Image (tube, rainbow, N blue to C red; front, side, top):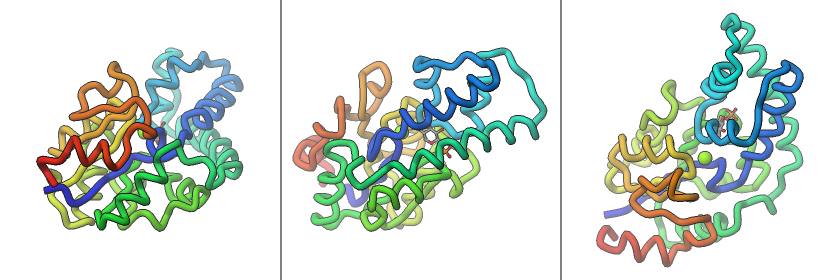
Length: 219
Ligand code: G6P
Ligand code: MG
């Protein structure tokens, strides 16, 4: 029986990938590192520290731990400043409608994001009230593809993983949902989230009606 829904944030509720890209690009330009949209795709869903390691490995760069933290903080300051431009008009099409519908139908709803800035993003969108539980980058130590953030959310909702559906746009996010024993909905192309239980190209197609039809045996 499905009783709860756990949403990733970036790429599911809102599209922060572009803002992350611009911030990493600015840092990389300053450092003389190569960084492009293809590499940015590899950062989808993974933590800030894992992200900088991916960029440094790509550029064959090694630095002390302190220097890496300093650079990741620099990127974060650029990113956080750019979040000030985000408004309640910046939901991905369909996301607000689905959240509204799920609440009306009495489902429990949680956030399961790798971002340490998730609360700020939710505040900018005026979306905090949709969530019974907020799991973010500060909630658990191990980030996706480990299932920990989704397990944290389901525990706080007092639900078993098998009673929850995870919405994710990242390959590693779907890996995490599967590893935790959750139902999964992939948002995006087959090559990225084709391993989800069901996949939609965008949140606009993931309507309550479509989701309910797919999981009808579990309602
Ligand atoms: C999300 C994004 C990633 C980002 C991560 C950490 O999962 O998809 O691209 O690296 O959050 O975000 P943060 O706001 O903590 O740097
Ligand atoms: Mg995401």
